[in-house]
Amino acid sequence: MAYDEIIYEVTDGIATITLNRPDKLNASTFKMEREIRDAFVAAGRDDGVRVIVLTGAGRGFCAGFDTSSLAEAANESQGALDGEQLGTHVEDVFGTPHPDYLGRYSYFPSIPKPIIAAINGPAVGLGMIMAMFCDVRLASDSAKIGAPFTRLGLVAEHGISWLLPRLVGLSNALDLLFTAQPVNAEEASRIGLVSHVYPAADFRAKVAEYAGHLARNVSPRALRITKAQVYADQYRTLDEATLIADEEMDKSLATEDFREGINHFLEKRQARFTGR
Ligand SMILES: C/C=C/C(=O)SCCNC(=O)CCNC(=O)[C@H](O)C(C)(C)COP(=O)(O)OP(=O)(O)OC[C@H]1O[C@@H](n2cnc3c(N)ncnc32)[C@H](O)[C@@H]1OP(=O)(O)O
Image 1 (spheres, rainbow, N blue to C red):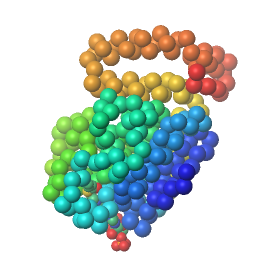
Image 2: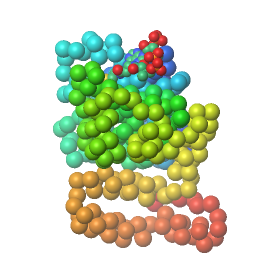
Image 3: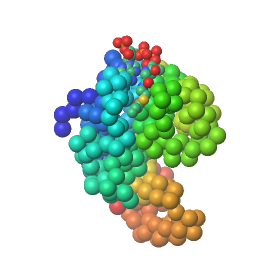
Image 4: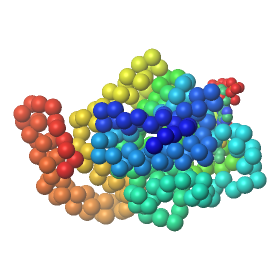
């Protein structure tokens, strides 16, 4: 599929979605959001893809929704997005507990593969929310992450009020949302907003190493089930989560990937997981 505002590439089991409006620090548009959805669906369906990286072209990750469109949209509802604005219904492809509701990025957890946000520079507004809805965040030491919503007279948008406290705790979440002040990569790491920070000069190589590890050394089946478990368990009790874990363990013990997981260790060789 041809894209205008993103670049979509698949190499060695890693699908990379690059937001591609570098002159505007990859500020997002509805078109870009539709293309991101289409690319996630393509990556989710492609058996050759084991991990997905979301990143930005040039020196930015994403500076939020394009401010010129934001100004035009001042009198329109930005919360209730319709299908035409968003394009592909990812929810129809991979399933969701809320099939009638089209969340802006809340579909990321339904993509059955790990999604890594490679935050190469400023990730602000919708750019921050996009990164938060990825499964893992890696940051360049030049990254800056911020939620400027209250400064714009806006609110905790698009599910970030649900997600951010789970990532950084209530107190840090409210600090970020109230003050609307961006944090640098070091501070983001300290509060748990990102998992790893790498020097800007090595960043692309470090992201490739991390993504390559998930693509080569880890069972794709185990990744898929683990991702689904962790998100679904946010709505479950401990007893329910433990019961499901026991059921999933029984199923895992009967898989080729489990046998390979044991055999490659015993035979002291690289694993060759099939996802079965
Ligand atoms: C529904 C609503 C959702 C939301 O996302 S609300 C949030 C909307 N976004 C923002 O309010 C962020 C606006 N941008 C900034 O505050 C800053 O940028 C940054 C902190 C992200 C980075 O600052 P620095 O590194 O100094 O870069 P620079 O010189 O400000 O920007 C470089 C070029 O990028 C353009 N740009 C930046 N953000 C946006 C944007 N959101 N929409 C459109 N263009 C943007 C600028 O204008 C400029 O361009 P030129 O070099 O031609 O002057």
